[in-house]
Image (cartoon, rainbow over all chains, first blue to last red; front, side, top):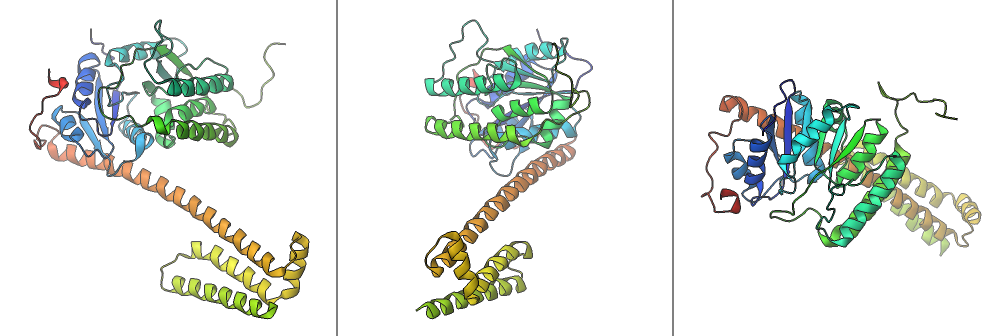
Length: 256
Length: 137
């Protein structure tokens, strides 16, 4: 049952780099299961048939002139969403990992009380949490999850998930500044530092339909080190900025 | 020996300084990047000419031979310059990223305007024979 959100302008951003095997399916799934969402494919300099296949579906396409990497591609989506005044933006990866069925669940969570700014689909909150990924990758994810949970004082189970829904405030923030290479983990930290609220909802994710992941197994170690560096430098970088609607910069300790 | 070493150092520093100035004159090197080079060359030149200062500096740093101290300082400047370039490169890649994003957004808008309203893919050229993939099932 497709859902409509009459008062909201919604955008689904599909970053794609050489995803000719899955791109059509991904776009059509969004059209089917989340028809309220305009689809924007960000073609990150693909050299295969990703672009013509995306064009054939009638989706909007941003053609990046050269490969920027996932961070730059998704940020282009944020910039587009900001420029066109979208209220909601969801990221759905072009490799078919993310299930367009679940977009409504993200939307429903965002509409709930507490009104989070970012809703993140987590692979590790479902009953069957045997996400089929190599052990090395899962270990890395859990290490990041542990560190971020300590920093944010809230449980973060899947900080590498790209399946996220953002509201206008988060869109404005990330259009301004979004991390480069492996952005998801650092983005969680930015959410925290800018005093936005993030919640996770359980989602199922598929194995990749085709193409090659941006993170090969050989790069896993590099990925770990790079993101850890970014996390700790990030901790030292931004003194939490007081933002409108945020907590007071100096406040008495709560509770006695 | 020491004097000859001194002459070589002076010649090298003067040569570097002149080369940098010439590049700036021909607009091959921006002043922004030339300044650090000229500063390095000037310091090395000064230390090569003014031997007492170099000797004292070497003693301060616990280096026995003055030429080694000169060498050490020169390496320090090189590291500084390299770091400076890494920073400049980071800024450039950031700028080119933003440029690419905005170019893509503008280009999409142009296509949409020319194609008569969103989404402008109706007239997309068929550049491929529709291939059979699982997606078409």
